Every structure is written in C-alpha cells, then in structure tokens.
Image (cartoon, rainbow, N blue to C red; front, side, top):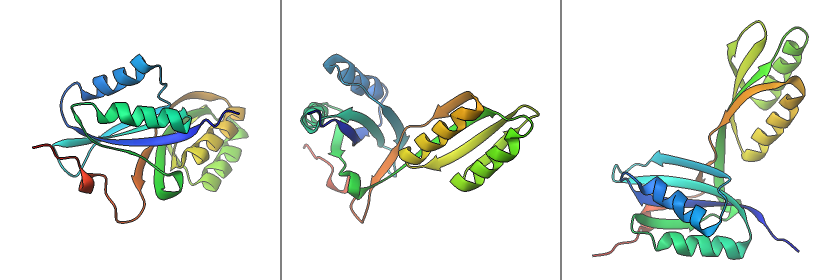
Amino acid sequence: MDNTARQIISILVNNQPGVLSRIAGLFSRRGYNIDGLTVCATEDDSWSRMTITVNATPATVKQIVAQLEKQEDVVKVMDFDPVKVATRELLLIKVSAGGAKRSEIADLIALFGAKAIDVTAGSMMLELTGSTDKVDNFVRILGEYGILEMARTGGAALERGAGSLAKSEKTED
C-alpha cells in the first residue's frame, strides 16, 4: 500500500544568492520531485522562506527534512501537519470566453470568488486565490471552456496559531 500524500515543507534560509539553486539541486540529486515551490522575503531581511510541496511518503519526507537540515544556509526546516497549516495559492488563468460561454464563466467567477482581470472579445483572464484543492477544482471546471494559458504560484503556507518558524531558529555560535 502506497501512503504517498501531499506534504508542505517550510524552510527558513539565509537570504543569499544561490541558495534556491542549492536547495533545488538537493532535491534533484536525491530523486525527489518538487510539486510546488514558492520563495519569498520574510519579516527579517537576512532570511527568505521557501515553501516546498512534495508528494511523498512520511519516510521520504523525513529523509528530505534531514537532508535539508544539513545544508549550510538552512536556518530552520518544518514539515507542516496539514491540519495546523493555512495555505494559499494564486492562479492566473486565461480561458476562451466568446458568446454564451461568457455568462457561464461569470457565474463560476462569482461561485469561486475569483476576479476577472482582463476581458477581450474572445477571452477572459481570471485570478483566483485559495487552497490548492479550490484552485485544482477551478482549473478542472474551466478546462471545459478551453484554457488558453495559466500560471500558478505554488503554495504559500504558515502554521496556524501564535507559533513562528523564525522564533525557534537554529543558532550556531
């Protein structure tokens, strides 16, 4: 029985050139596939946050975390409990939207809480922010109308509650 599941790993790293390449290289060298990757600045200019989504077994996630913790530029690694994390993803999607399709798509926009950000005679560009499941469902439904192009950010995630990845950072003096 394969107990593979979507897992979110959050990594606090030194904000230095080449860190993203080294972390991605670690995944590549070990044969791990990255399903989603988001990198952003944090509240502290010296750090960046990497949010990596993988589809893996718990044992594989444990190996990934152990390998990440050995990296010089890694300050802290946390694999999130799916129940204790808030995640959001941004989708930009352009669909074919001529004639009668337009009103049906407008209904979907309202239903999902999306926004139309560009409208032409034959297409609509939409924006949606939400959980990965919500974004996946929106994409699946819009597939029936003809997706012309799309871009997704990958997930951004923070642990629920007052805790902070940075509050328990690793210190080496």
